[in-house]
Every structure is written in structure tokens, then in C-alpha cells.
Amino acid sequence: MQSHQFIKYAFRIRTKLGVVVDNLMIHGRDEHEAQRKLRQVYHDCQIIECICHHGSVRVPVASFEEVANLIVR
Image (cartoon, rainbow, N blue to C red; front, side):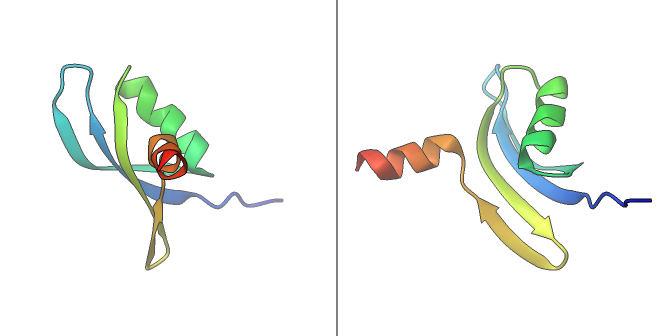
């Protein structure tokens, strides 16, 4: 029997109405799954920040927009 490891992701988002919501904690096998679960609840939201909580270590996960901004500069 294979065990699935879930990781906690803390999201900071802007809802489609413009409200910023901090520290939305969502479990997922990876960031993609956590984002999918987030978007089921917050349709059309903008992800401002995602921090991966893997055990006691916090690892920032860059969004597509942040990576694109770094490339363009």
C-alpha cells in the first residue's frame, strides 16, 4: 500500500472582487493540486503569493507572474 504525502500551501490571493485574503492553508500532493482546490472555492482569483510548508521548513513558491517579471527585466 502506497502512502500519499500531502504538503501544506499557504496562499495569499486577490478575489475577483478585489479583496486580499491572507494565509489560506490548503493541502495537496503538489502546488498544482493545491491551486486547483483553491480555485474551486475562489473562482477567478489572482494568486499573489504561495508558500510551501514542508515540515517545519517554509519554502516560497514563485508564481508564474513573478517568474515572468524576472525574465522580462
